[in-house]
Amino acid sequence: MADDLKGLETWNDAMTSLQLLQIDPHGFGGVWLRAPFGPVREQWLQHLSQAGLNTVKLPGNVDVERLLGGIDLSLTLQSGRLHMQSGLLQQADQGVVLISMAERLAPALIAPMTQAMDKQSLPPLNNNTQTDGSIRTQFGVVALDESMNDDAPMSPALQERLGLWFDLQELAPADITGVSLETIDPHSGQDAVSVKIESAALAHMRHAWPHIRWTDTQALAVCSTAQGLGIDSLRIPTLALRVASCHAALHLRKEVNDEDLAFAARRVLAPRATQLPAPAENAAETEPQNSSAPDSEPNSEPDQTPEENSNPNPEEPAEENSPTDESPENSDTAKEEDAPLNTPSPENLQEMMIAAALASLPSDVLASLLTKAGRNSGNTSGRSGQFRSGSQRGRPLPPRPGKPGGHARLHVLATLRAAAPKQRLRSGAQQGRVAIRAEDFHVHRYQQHSSSCLILALDASGSAALQRLAEAKGAVELLLQQSYARRDSVCIVAFKGAQAQLLLPATRSLVRAKRAMTSLPGGGGTPLALALKMACEQAIQLQRQGVTPILVVLSDGRANVNLQGLGGRAQAQADALQWAAQWRQTGHRALWIDTSLQPDAQVQNLAHIMGGSYMPMPLVQAQRMASAMDNIRRLAA
Image: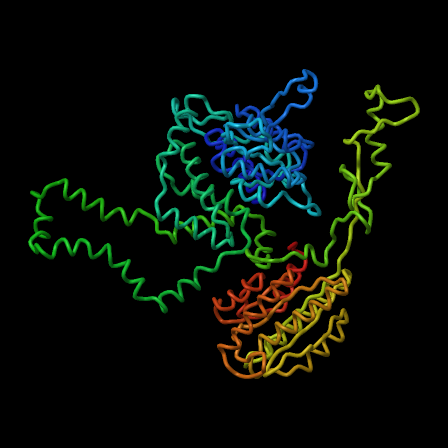
């Protein structure tokens, strides 16, 4: 039931996006719609066609000259005189560009399109006929993405510029029947069902939305929410505020309220989340201890202003209670006292937006965010230990339409099957020969399996080492049992005292892992830098063998032994930072499981420098640890 309601909310928001496009077609970039070809997507596109927008469809075989404008070659050759044609982006001025199969759009087309979106003008052409400079054009983009799990998604450059993201892959046609829209007719005050906004109401909304303002508190909440969800682009909070303003104009509001911010959180921030926000309880516990003075000053400001106004004249409090006081002054002071109580704080707005964002995400996505790659990750290893689509070898998959060349090989049988029904329409074909066109080409596709090795850097130092070792042993056993069918392996690097040792080379043997973990004593210093150095060396060896390494560090991150095996916390921490950055250069994924009693900012910084994800686990649990390791295996970089 909850999934049905979530799908219904997604469809309602997708319908609302069509109305936001009518108000501001180019302001928030556009819409990224992930949905396969089917009734759900066709119904959304039907509503788009009924919205009255200037929609220009971008063909899959378009070239740069047709996109930006240039010489009309066919008309020039026919007439013998030079004729120019306007590009598709110019024709889409004050409208939207509809891109089918946007995941296959060539980079040579994406670059000038994103440049035109940023500059709101077409880039100059390399010809001598254009002397009037650049052409002004403002347009939004509706990108239809049909990529599946084994396909590469749409270009990140275009993704970042599209404000609204929707994933309709899991929606069934039965889930979207009888859906009504929440729009308000300014004349009748009744709810309207049609996606298209009346011309008079649309003109009023377009005139009103530039004057809609948000407060500094709301802007701070949006930026804090984006930071908490791991969104590192400064463009995204701006798009979220723009969407919230359009949403407020759609509902005939003069100011942005919580409902508008919640919509922006669901459709702009939540789909881009790369991590779960830090728990609010830990922040509330640490802030009063470390910064009690700064916290007390803001709280005292509202209380000091009435006192400062009343101290010079001590008789004013008695006059305020008398019935002969001037009513305007009393009303103004009452409004000033009530305003701080009714205005939400940035923390409350941030909690509301985070709750709205997390509520819109599927449960499996919430679980995977704990072990997803960090926001500044340098991972380039692709899917490790999982099935990957390729075009050269592996288990054959169904062919797909595509242009042969490079590593893509022509699938002859599928190409002939695609061309056979069209032979009668191709009258120019000679008898006995099959007429094949470019749209008939199909290419081979294979499924490849890449094995992975999980390098576990295990902190065996300190008094809590025995408990960590016991739980890590259980997690490794569970992991080896699960990964036997995938032919994945585990490598264990233990560090304590003044050295790090290769406790267990890469192996799939459960017996060897148990034996190695049992014979490891605990206690001593924390040579974290030596452990990271050894992990990098093991990763290089594994990569030469065609195995993808993944690093999991189980430690509290309090290094106190440097690379030379000598004590000294400052130098030990500097060496650890150096080798954490070295792991980032390898381009492989990493996960840091923090065993501190409270989430430590220093450990988070180490995980960030490694380009990995951070997971606090004060009480190490074998099942939870094994689940985190398994997730980091399966997630794509």
